[in-house]
Length: 442
Image (cartoon, rainbow, N blue to C red; front, side, top):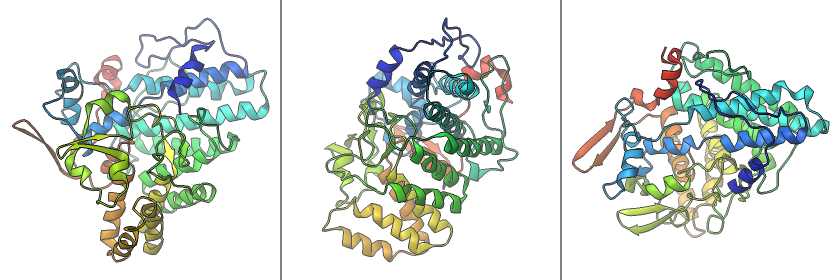
């Protein structure tokens, strides 16, 4: 996905939604109210542009990233407190998570859904497609918000655990309060069902494939159900995706998270943007997760020295990816394992690994995986998720929902520890949002 194309489209937007002073920052004060399908498409394009890259920022909390004293002072001020999980004492120059932008996208999605019967000068299919995309955006924004700022679904009682505000209308006058996590996920599942009824575009041309399509509904379903621990449902959704597109990239020629990769289902987020990619080094221990015959060692990374490895699969809008088939193989493998079908789990795992190891080395990898105990097989599935989906915004979320391990960091002479099961596996709601709306602290 070419982000520049998105911005070019938005430049012609006829409806301007300017910021206001309330905590959502979404009140429409523009001079023109959208009426035509073309105007609503421009409005929806603005929503796509506004989707934050916060999954990339959250990656600084995971075990993927290394920060060191050679960084610029500006970078240290921006990311160090996030990297050391110092949420309560973060400096004023620490990078902020994009609370307002999420709710701006939700406002637009809700507005399109509410106004669908008033849209003129468009075909029925065109209008329904935009409404379906709006349901997908609403589901996805709530999903990301919940996984940034609420406990993991499988680590709490969702019925009694407060999460983030659930926003299902375009009213900007009401003061929102935090909803229960179970209600957030119920809304996400419902929105996916609604999206399936409306979306009618099978695929978008490269450059427009930041938009949601028919296959994306089941792809996101598979992820959502995986995070909920609903293994049968996640597996079934992944299977439906792979029945339509089971292609995997040749990583030696095209990286799987490239917008034009055969794997790409939705190329919306540039998760590891140029600023993040420029700042970080790859954690040495994380790099060691890749065995020597693993083709991704050279495809994903560039090793400068033994202590300095930099990222290749990020840093430009070429690498824009939200949903892809590689994830579906991993969702299927994990879900199959959790249902007790270990042979099926092995099958899905090996289908992915066959494309990621050299031809000469794969038979040895296959033999090794087939010989794993059940527990070791699950560990390998988790490790493969780390290797395959590295720096695509999955790792921090995966750590949260699975083992929540102890992580130790060193910077100069100091040591920083995230304990196993630490409450800091949940990122607090941004302080500026709470200052504007104190009910969010409750």
